[in-house]
Image 1 (cartoon, rainbow over the protein chains, first blue to last red):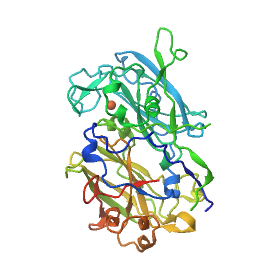
Image 2 (cartoon, each protein chain N blue to C red):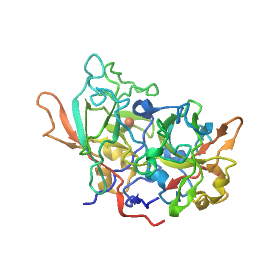
Image 3 (tube, rainbow over the protein chains, first blue to last red):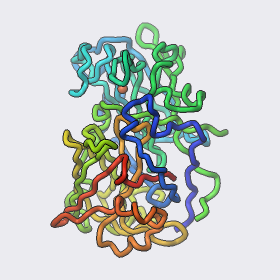
Image 4 (tube, protein in one colour):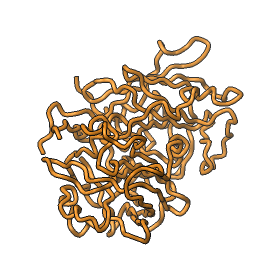
Length: 234
Length: 187
Ligand SMILES: [Fe+2]
């Protein structure tokens, strides 16, 4: 086998630790032993490749998945998926899920006393284009309460899941909204030491993508792990 | 130009809403060559409670150790129809089960070989980043020379090796925290 270039290690402080005790469920779900550092092998440098299979016509438009239109503030969320070398990640799977405008998930475990919307399922998926771009039409999710601590509310957020080219580049994250007053109170948003890294989870209002009489635009670029310039020593 | 990777965030409790469309209990569809195995287990937290709201992702090579990915120089020889990926949720009792075929050994660092293994990622509420582990097969002579197992404290190695539990059935529990904690990796 030819030697393959490995992926960079994360910058210190830019990824959360497993234990973040203000997020209470990390206390019993985080490993207590140090992770074992291993070389990146062919197993980690490969990963699943997805095509259009199973992706439906309205999977990128969460406002058109039912007979009627969902309630709430219509929005367009778009951005580019890049690697750490600023190269676009083309034709990669992006999955999205979220609460409805009232802050309720279309999920049986969500018992929040806010209305379900029969016209909103809150999930989408698409592949990025050749330039790594993605774009979803949806409604802005509401904040919702959770039981982490007294009077705990999650700031409005979208859940994103991405694959990238390898097992190594898998990422699940959340996107937040500019100016949300709940952000300083949220232990999940605040789980990362590096303030700049944290703030990159906040989307930007995008006037140019905002559509007159129709929907507000938000931009959220996503960066997946990138490769080292040279093959790894092995 | 140099960027920093986006910060990971938990999948939260409602992960299945966005992710279950790729759920499967057959990583390798019936008819794929190789020795078929059924694998089942439970995910257990630091208080011994079962974790009912988690998801595994499996990644593996085919029965000859080839990955369905362009980075594998032998990818063109992968068995047609084989992808080697699957998502498996835990149920209300914190249990998971899936079927697959035992992969072949795959190239390792420095021209050596790795014993047959599955890569396993674990996603759940309370995990701010997913965890990565490996499942190895019992009674597999190549385990003794596997370069990744060799990096694991011998006393903890057995947390990575499934138990034979009957006819082509393997059991493998994932313990997130505690004295019997499963070995998790970083790269
Ligand atoms: Fe959420």
